[in-house]
Length: 382
Ligand SMILES: [Zn+2]
Image: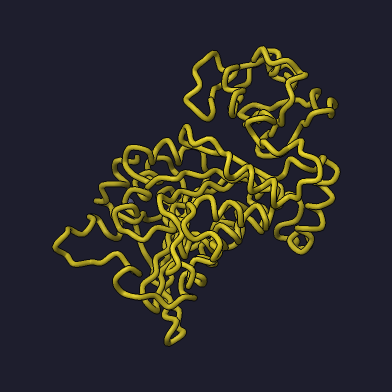
């Protein structure tokens, strides 16, 4: 019998089952088991009692909850991603009777322990499996009616993970549409807090959220929109030291940043990891959007080989130049659309093309792009 490898995530105090190698808020390990092993077999191998009260997600789908033992017989497959969340660390308000969902969300948000790189959270756990599937059938009904997507497409969305770098204008819109569409796991990276002057275009944040972390504000908004989505928050800037760790767990990276250095970093990480980079940029009344997938076409560096130097006087967008508020909305929506198409493998992506949008004149132009044979990033990624 062949062996299979499982990608196992232990969150909160369950990280102790990783043999004391917890890196803070979670532990991630590869477990090798005989093919055909069940969830119960995995629990045994980890030394985790089946009575351990927690949640199990397999490939992003809720699989077992306290009191539902049937799922323990579930057969696991090679390369499955299995995540365990403990109730106590996961959601402190879980057992409070009579608390409204909003209160529970508030409490969970504010008690989130600020340790480790990643903080994962979902509101999904308050309903049982049958309710979840009924809710999802209705929630995604209009998507399920599309023959190009259907049930298998919806499952693919649920199994997918997308990292959004920046919870500003672009990230606000792309994260909300991806959450609404049912992308199962969304990571959000942003170091900033919400300011009053953001709200003109950063629609994931509310007036009440001023002064709070953008990643928390966006997470709360996503939870209100679709509690089935697992949200990872990274309250930090995306930089050369953390970018590989942060992004390694996601299928696709979406650009919601406001600076050029970060774009080069996202690009280089994506080229190296063979992941698509869904690019978006906004400037006054204009926007650009494209897909850089170095496996299929050009990367960002194929177009712009080197970051501009300080004396090139290229400014970092809205801060200095002003911004027509709907431009990030239009570009962010197109980014979300491209991400969803990539996940589903439908239509023609913007790989090898860049769409330029001028809202004042309301024109769209398409620029065809090709791979640069001398591109440093593509060469290094081969
Ligand atoms: Zn390139």
